[in-house]
Amino acid sequence: MFENVAEHLDEAVRLSERCPEKYQIPCFQALIKVLAQSDALPSQTGNSVGYPAVCNGAGQSDGGNERSPVSANGSYNDNSPARQEAGERGIIFLHQYQIPGPSISRVYHLNGDSYRIIVKDLKEKTNSKKQVKLALLLGVGGLLVGGQPVFSKERLIEVCREYGAYDAPNFASHMKKQRDMFIAQGNDWSLTVPAQQRAAEAIKELAS
Figure (spheres, rainbow, N blue to C red):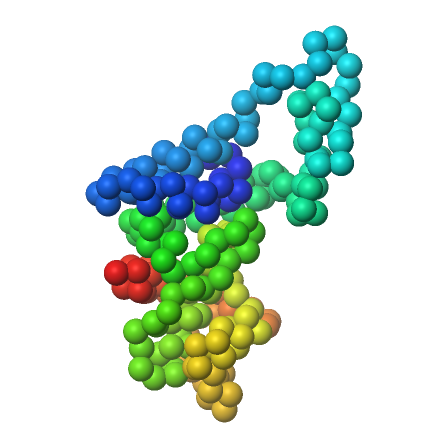
């Protein structure tokens, strides 16, 4: 149903903020569909004699009909089925837990296939609770931009330090105590379904 969803997720979040609050979720869903489908529309410009288009240095074809997979800034325009599926999973999560676009933009800065937690106050007092909440937010961030609620140990340590919550001696034990929420996968953790629900509640709380 949705094509190229992940590519347009952050844009839809920004635009949906302009809608009245009670309409933000349906507005967000409609924007995602329109923005994603716009990529599938055939170009109305190009050479009229059927010559093959030649791609220029900016990734735009001379005939306006084709694009290079690499954009002018060196990043890839990934419209692969896997990328589209990843975006759909993020949309399903937001819809399932009724999280409006403005709530996401108050907690995350989304930039294509990357994200950053930007909320100032985690609304927790102890380092252990801050660490758990950051882990939940990282998992959802991975889900939104990559389709999987996964984050690395290094990323969690990094954000814990940013929020003054890194407790090196007890770092591992904090995660082990939450076996119902975090599943270890080598050097990564993934969120369980109950953890995703907790994460959705945390996002709503932090965005309020």
